[in-house]
Image 1 (cartoon, rainbow, N blue to C red):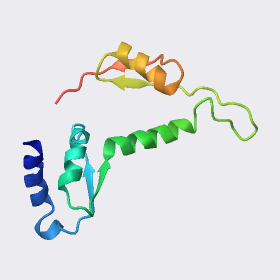
Image 2: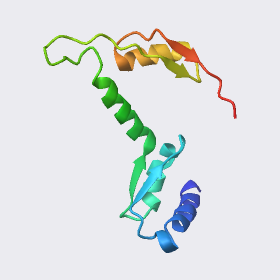
Image 3: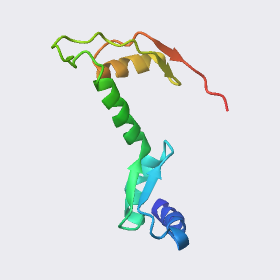
Image 4: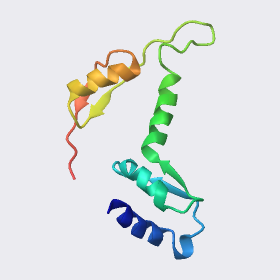
Length: 116
């Protein structure tokens, strides 16, 4: 059923004036869950870009330039940058998981409630 609905939408999206489009950007947080289905139904020449992955790689690249493991030109280590995190979920859970990914403690995580 999901694939059938996706095919209807993608046929419409890549029809008419957009049949030559070669890239589709997944701009919503739940779209990556549909990526395997979308890969099957979009035209073969279309590249699917997951904006969440692209953003994560860009952030990791920027953080990697400033993390303590990155030596500066004279061989010394940089200080841990002061980072402030804003999370919409549990700050405790974010700290636990975030420390695993970053490799150092997260001291400043503030919960925010997003309003529409």
